[in-house]
Image (cartoon, rainbow, N blue to C red; front, side):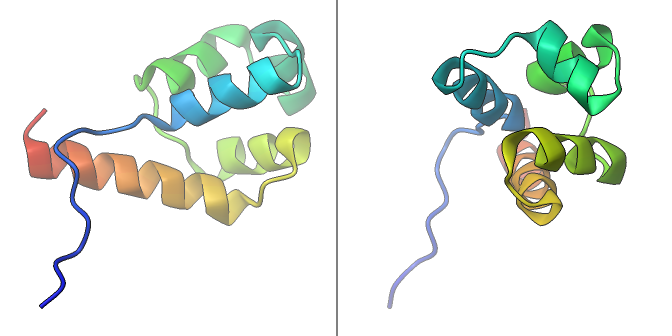
Amino acid sequence: MVRPFQPNWASKPGNTIVDWMKENNRTVESMAFEMGITTEKLNEVIDGRAPINWAIASGLSYVTGASPGFWLLRQKQYSESVIRLGI
């Protein structure tokens, strides 16, 4: 029987955002501006203090090219891992 992959760690969606920003030479300020949100809000998302909702997912999609569904799934997986691990 194959067990589903369940790591003993949780990866914030913000890690993916930061990786994308590095690969594309972007700053939090420029990305937040394009998304139409404050740098404070984007930093909250990156740090895991604010979840990715539909509006944030749409903005991330506009800037990165990844679908809103990708960003919402990324948030869902992180949230489920946090609950499962009790962190």
